[in-house]
Image 1 (cartoon, helix red, strand yellow):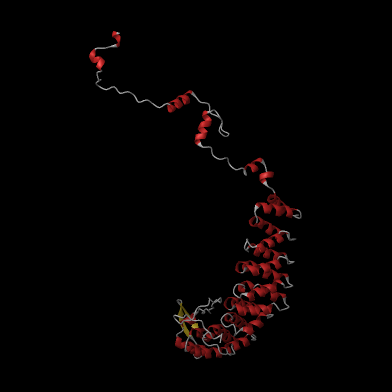
Image 2 (image 1 turned 90 degrees about the vertical axis):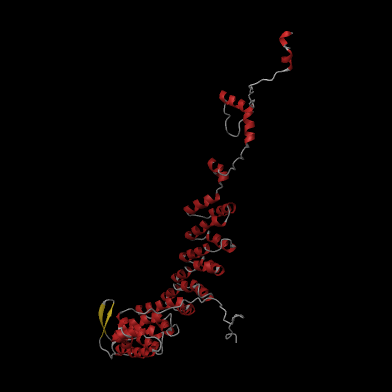
Length: 429
């Protein structure tokens, strides 16, 4: 009952969206060629051989088409006409002429999107055809069909991945790579099976695909990375470790666990990938800080260098100085010794005079009034010498200190006092 249950909106009754699919929908691209100019009614007769020659004009050129072109033209027939196209394609797949079988294989993936009955059975047979061109066309059809028909080609992909023929194996891995985009869960099953192979090359090619499924397959992808990191073959572990920085951005907890294990790996490239992942972790994480400190004491100089470069970002000056002093006791690399010495030194105490002065706080500014009072008393202000006053400066200062008296204005008429009127003057006494 739980599988049949569908959550619906109580207001509209429509199914609720429970998240976006992580699969990337794949399409089969139509082949371009002069067969696109064939009239729809003439495609089946030409594909069956009922019409021997067929002239068309395509892109300003004239072409004489044969049965092979008619078979490829079957990809244009959709809907109800796809049934007749399917029957015509089956005839082409079992034809004795290799060129006809090659043309039918080129049309197979797109015709299968309309009707796929028996087509993949024929594809499986033609993968082992006696003719080389037919086998190559079948391998190409398999890689194209893989992301669209994962269940139809599942066994074929499994077998072709392990083929001793380099061309067949190449097309199978190409199809598996496209499966990682369209059906990551199915691709993980194939990669899981590859990790069980004794051939290290197959395990390596599978590990190189982990980055494509890591963020789409959830815990299944994490398990695959974990198993690959335990592989006996160093290149396989390197390929798996390269996915750790990407995982660190998606899931910090899992990335921390896997990076801690990879940090102790015997291969230097695996350890470097682990450090890159740790550098992508949250800098406030206590576990990330512990791993950086652990890496700063690693036997691998490249790991130590990468971790020591991270120390100033993680710690303040006081803590950094103590860590650097401890690391200097065991460090042997000249470049790292120089870096750690710079971290351990305190310029405010051990530096030159110029370096010490950079740590001195500037003196507070002296108020203007206090400066004027001090200068008037003949005292030096700060480090500035007292400027001697000239005669002009003294005169100007006196003018500024003594307020100007308003000038008396003599009027045109002067008032007469009583003494003047009575004729009394001081000269008479």
